[in-house]
Length: 341
Image (cartoon, rainbow, N blue to C red):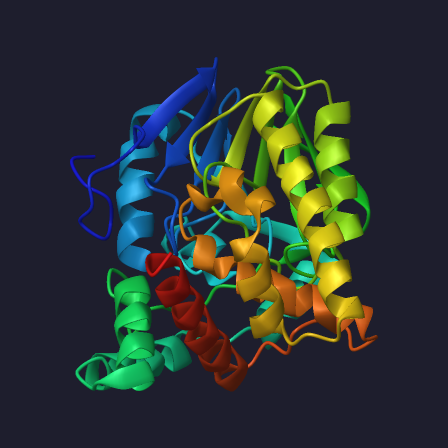
C-alpha cells in the first residue's frame, strides 16, 4: 500500500502477507481507527477467513487479494473474533455458502452494537461541527478524521450463523483451527484463533502493536490473562488486530502496559478522580513515556473510563451512539493536552 486509509505514509508494510505455508495476514497500516487486520488459512480444497474489514468496499479489496490462494480452496468458513464493526461489517462480501462463526457472547454483543447508519450519521454531524471553533470543532474534526475513510451507508449486516462457548476446534481443508474465548476483555466476547500446525495466532484486538489499545468491556485482569494465554500457546507469530505482525516480545509489551495502567488507575481511583482527571494525571507521569509514541495515545481515556467503571462496580461502558460521542469528545481533549505537552 502506498498510503494508509487516511492518506498518511505507512510505517509498516500492508497488504496480504504470507506467514507460513497456507497462512496469510491481511495488514492495514498504520493500525489506527478502523485500520484492522484479518487473516486467511488455506487448507486442501477449503479456506477460512478470520475477520472482515469495516465496510464492504474494503472487504471486496481484501477478498480480491486473497483470490490467488482461494481459487482452488474456496472460503468455506469465516470466523469473527469480536463485535467491533471493523472486524465483521464486511461479512456480506463473503461467499453465500460461507459458514460464519463467532462466540456466543460476541454474537449477542454484535446485535447490541451501534448500527452502521448511526456511525454514518455521526460522521455527517462531525463534518458539520468540525467547522466550528472550540471543543465542538475539535471533537468534530477528530471524529471526521477517524470515520472519514469508511462507507457506512452501504453496509448490509450479515451476522454469524454459528456460535460456540469456551473453546472449539474447526477443521478446514484438513487443518485444525483452535478457537478460544478470552473475553470479556476488549469486548464482551473476544476470541483468538490458533493455527497449531503453523505456530500462528490471530489475536485480533486482544493484541495491539505500537498502537494504543482500547478497552470497551474489561476488566483489565481478564485482558492480562488473555495475553498470558497467547504466550502459553507456544506460537512464534502473532497477528494483532491493529499493527504489524509480531512475536512474543510484543505480547509481553502489551501485558506490561496493562499491568502498569491498572496500577496507575487504581491510584487515581483512590483519589476519587474522574476519568478525565485520571488520564491527564497519568499522561504527565514519567511512566507514560514508553507509551507516548504509540499511535493514538489519546485513546487511553476510553480504557481509563472502563477501568473506573469496574472499580465503581458499574460494569462495562454502555454501547450507545451517545456514549461513543461523549467518549470521542473526551478523547479529543486528551489529544489536545498531549499536543500541548
